[in-house]
Amino acid sequence: MPSCNEEKISKVCCKAIIKHREKINAIQAKIKELQDRCPHYGLIKTPGADVGNWDRNDDEYWTDYKCPYCNKQWRTYHDEMS
Ligand SMILES: [Zn+2]
Image: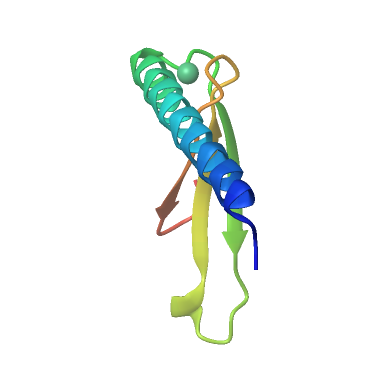
């Protein structure tokens, strides 16, 4: 059974963590805003594929995109190798 004092410390830690998480969320929102504004100059495109499946309908093609400046990364799926 934890003492009252330990419970107090835990509650203080919890409060501090919540505050820090709020800051992280705000910073992440700011980063996202900047990434959305970035024109992604020199975008790196890496094609990927999962082919040779027994059922060809299971084959997948995609392209991974990465901006060398803002570091935004995303993937788009498409029907064929491009
Ligand atoms: Zn970018």
